[in-house]
Length: 275
Image (cartoon, rainbow, N blue to C red; front, side, top):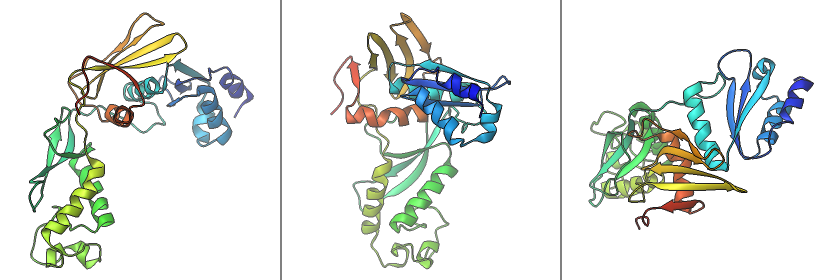
């Protein structure tokens, strides 16, 4: 680490936003976000968590935002479009895989893997959002092992008479061999899946999430979990608009779902949210 990098880092703003580690090449080395840009970049330098990246860094770039949500949305967008060398690659998925549940009111539950392009409606029972069926099955296997669920009943192994592989490993409570009722198993399954529930959009139309820093205001328009545009009072115009508003973006959903339902945001909506 050179004194030059420390000097450059100390010149960064200490507010929310996105920062880029730059080298000699065209692609950025790394993109991150923080509510304290300067402090976060200095911590990268002091911790030396990626010496190779630091050895390639020549300077930093940054974009300040009025709040943390703006920083999170901008970071996700820039990683997708600029493909930095040292970030986990993010991509906009044309469709996602989710786990549908049939017959939730009955004793026996049926699972089905579905493609999800648009946000789910209130009437749909959807659990988990995955970039592929294989990724979903991997997470479902982990869930089964944690909650002693039957691999055969979950469709994770070919249905056959007798014990599933989990029973042989003492990780299944035995619905496959008659040691547990189907109703008991499926009640436990639904309870385990509840942590994966995909929330439907709670508003009848779009909302604007408002973030302020002093007199500076940014408005992020969100519609059915899609970030469609950001208006900046400092620039006095829309500074970003998404041309692909028809797709459901997993990363945007993850950024917004908790703060929206916890009520921690300043939101301006055209109508009240659904109960």
